[in-house]
Image 1 (cartoon, rainbow, N blue to C red):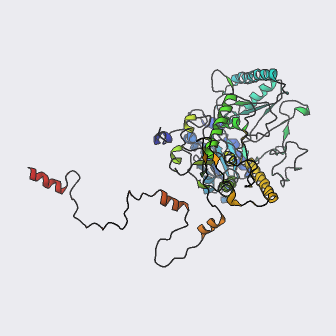
Image 2: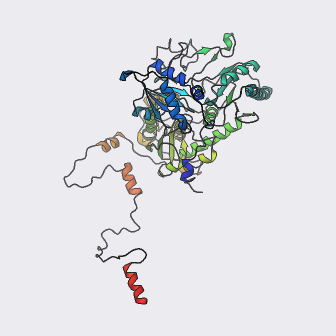
Length: 586
């Protein structure tokens, strides 16, 4: 089977992985104002005094982008003062994914805020204020009771079967949804509260974010969630004290209509609550199609059963995702095993705007090179395609740093497409396990700690970095207690490969500070205007030696130079010497 995959034309026109959207039709001005929140967007811009705004549209909304631009511009007041005028810029889709905010394009016009249209992953942006205009997938009001009943009846059947086999605590339910159904989820939630015998919580999302990650123009009671889910035990006393964990205390609201304090549930304003925050829930209801977001929910909450229902299907059928969860976990575990055998890693930049992305790239490179002495390259190819990565055949494993919804490629969405990558593509969380699983437990020759994968998944940058920081502190304390370990003796033993069934000695590279200093040193020229050879072992030197064709037998200096001879003349159809031969025959 060819490793190249589909043809170039098929790759260009491949849009099968985007969230389903309503087909483009002719909108009236009134429909555009309502559907794409023109008035709300204009009020948000004026309230926060943003003067340079970028309007980011996905490809399928570009045909109506100019009309939306004109309608929004007409709702903003004009001013003769240059400092008070509102400048709007149309921006096309980002080079990485339509769900991400294109911060680079915004920096080109010095934008203070971005209005993002279409499907969104809602990740925290580092330096920009963002207003999300989410899509509205079609859903009739008459279908809402049927959807709620189907979800709850499927859960009830599962819970009755579970309660027969073991003692179960009273269940806690969590309702999550695709961003395309944000405009109908409140009605579904209200109906679920009426028919449910158990407390249920809505995982709501916010569409307004400032550059610090907090919601702009938000009520005073709305705060970002703290990692300590108890206001009495929180490391802070108010939202203004950000010297401890860095976020404000958790917000508690009565979302299930109960006045009993014991039934108060956490109201998450994050688009994807961490698995630690949902550990107390017994099941998750998910409303939406099979998409990257559903795959993210399944993998990051693998210990909780997920009941998913696609409102676009007919008839409505709720499916438990237990079998899909097991298949995805097994597939990711097999990918980690393939990554264990790699010695050359490529750090694939899949986003340039998510908070802490540059810090995560640096930490990933440090983990590969300084801790495990392997080789790594940082590569940015824009929108990810198998046809692009196949050109880097030295790379044995890719580490993708992207938003949570793009970190897992197309797992669960397009299985055939995910098979087109010739080398494993893993997340930084999986990389940590792949490298540390090669270390023997209680190995006294290394300061690194062994890790065994327990199926837990972390895709959030903040949480991943905090875990890595804790691991680094533990290793430093162990190294100080046990004495300094000789770096030459670390990661030196052979490793058994689960893929080949054989032991393998790993290649290591000396990524010390000396090599970095040598590569940055100033070279003195000898005045002969000759080419200067750079540091041996650099990427350019490796490419010169390994990827340059020198012929079968160069025989340099062995053969005398050939004499100059008169060449052929004429055209390709008949050269001069060929015409002479034809004349002789005739």
